Amino acid sequence: MQELRFALKSTIPIFFTYLFIGIAFGILTVDAGYGVLLSVASAFFIFAGSMQLVMIPMMTSGASLATLALMTFFINARHIFYGISFVERFRKMGWRGVYMILTLTDETYSVLCSIQYEPGLDENRATFYIALLNHLYWIFGCLVGACVGRLLPFDMTGIDFSATAFFLVVVINQWRQYRTKLPFLTAATCALGYYLLLGKDYFLIPTLLTCLLALLALRKPIEAKEGRENA
Image (cartoon, rainbow, N blue to C red; front, top):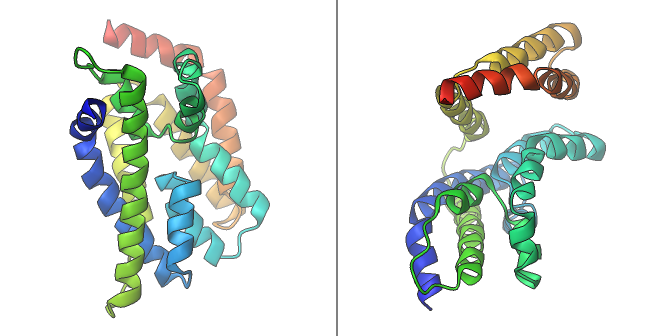
């Protein structure tokens, strides 16, 4: 089980990240009136922390299935590009490759891109264990959060802000990581414009669509800027 020990060592930091975010999601789920089973099932089948955190407020506000589907696509569309770089590698993994595609999160992708395998390891097996452990960490965090929310009688007012806090941290990290601020300025302009034009209930989908088109149009100058800075 050398590969499993290696995967554990490589994913310990992700365990703590997934544990606390998963607990927040589980508490949020129960506080919204849904059971422990939904929290665990969504962790197992959806396995997308950002989308799950967004999903609960949208469900409680009566969002349609079409809106949920569109939001899921836009929030997780980046995984398409993650997967492209691993297509050949996952194809060689047989049945494990299918699972790898389904569980390729930001954190798993980050680990796989930077990992240095120890000599003598079965790399395909170690890669599979990394994805599996991250998935189990998330399920465990969501389960713990749902049980805490169900069993402990405390005021959970404001727990829904965890979704906002999560995205703020992501935005701040990306703002600091990338030199060009054009994507952020584009998103802010679109969001503010549609919010003022359409109101809070209808601005999100048009904002995402416009941002997607705008960033596709601005792809070359963004890549040129990043390329020059990195060089």
